[in-house]
Image (cartoon, rainbow, N blue to C red):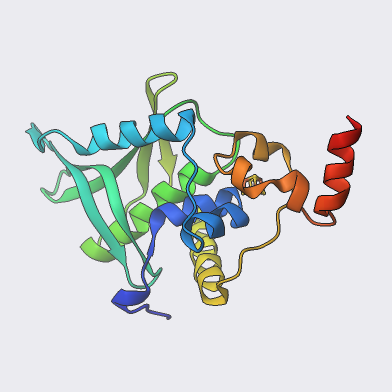
Length: 211
Ligand code: SF4
């Protein structure tokens, strides 16, 4: 089994960017470009709020916020918004990760993948199986329970491997304009209609002048 040394660990947040768009991931994490729009600003504030506040203990649930995570087998590190530790019948504490998201559940599996990566880190750190966790969405303000089944675990491990390959190559893939580009915070820096596969700047300028 591959294990990554401390200096090669990559952020879990990059995994979510990679799952959304490999080019977006490279622009943010290799080229260090970041474009904040209303959606990302709201998301950032929500995470900051989730990390604030005291840890709590109520009956058979202990809640910890802003928990540091790492996995040397996936080569990832990060911070979980909230980990609930639920006491089982046998008296052991079962970790249950909860990640906060603005907006609605998405059509893609990026959020589930990020949560699953957190669960895999926790499993490695605590030597315990974690079957479920939850995504808390702002609209509607509701939890959605996620099961970490084999399909999701495999997707997450594959994505972590692709992330390491992207960092090893150190090259930003070309743009490919798709519907998702319209909600991408890096659209104005990426310019997928200009720089996309098979596109060149001159024909783009000709088109713009003709309009
Ligand atoms: S604009 Fe489109 S191609 Fe460019 S980074 Fe965003 S999602 Fe990827």
